[in-house]
Length: 72
Image (cartoon, rainbow, N blue to C red):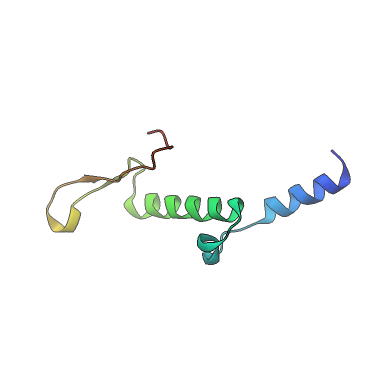
């Protein structure tokens, strides 16, 4: 690995989520925004099965639709 490539990789590794990433044109920024949203949703729901329990007080669960290119 040459020195300039190392510098680029180091800059990428230091990148952190920022709210403006949702509107960015950068694939890296949009990926960070999507990942942040997924982690936040899973943390708040307490599960990773993409199911919201007790939807609007009905006592029933509702599956969260996934993007067409995601496997689940």
